Length: 165
Image 1 (cartoon, rainbow, N blue to C red):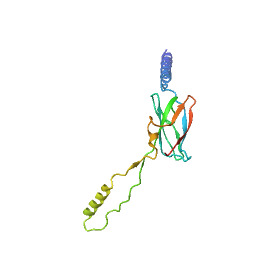
Image 2 (image 1 turned 45 degrees about the horizontal axis):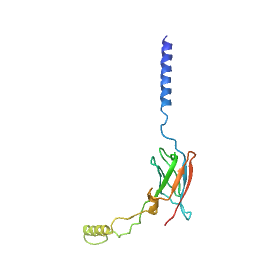
Image 3 (image 1 turned 30 degrees about the horizontal axis):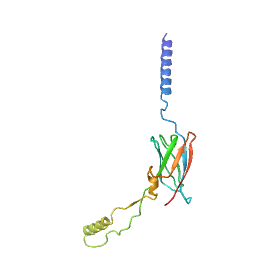
Image 4 (image 1 turned 90 degrees about the vertical axis):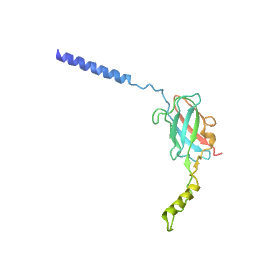
C-alpha cells in the first residue's frame, strides 16, 4: 500500500511538472530573421551605426548595430531573432565625437595654481567638443527616411545603401 501511495505521488508530481513545462511556452509573436549590410552608395561599409526598423503601422521596432564591415542582424525580443513581418521605415544613426583641439598643458611659472586656472580658462573658452553625425539627417527620422523594407515570414536579406548628400 505504501508503494502505491509513493507511485501515485510520483506520478502526480511528474504530471504537474509536465504541465508546467508545456504551459511555459512563449506567447511572443513569431519573428523572421533579418540581416544585411549598410553601405554608402560608393560601396564603402558604414561601421558602428545603429539601425532601427520602425513599423509604418505602429508596433514593435527591431534594432541592430553594424560591425566594421557594415553587417548587421536585427533584434526584436532577443538577440538575433529578427523582426516581425510587416512594413518598415529604416532609420540609421551614427554619432561620433569630433576630434578635440589640442591645448598645451600649463608649464613653468612661479604659481602652479595660477597656471592651472589659466589652462582651465583656455579649455573652457573653446567650448565642448562638438558631436558629429556622419549620417545625413534624412535617414535619422522615420518620417523622412527614404529607406523602406517589407519583412515577410521567410525573413529578409537587407542591402541598405545611403547617399552622403
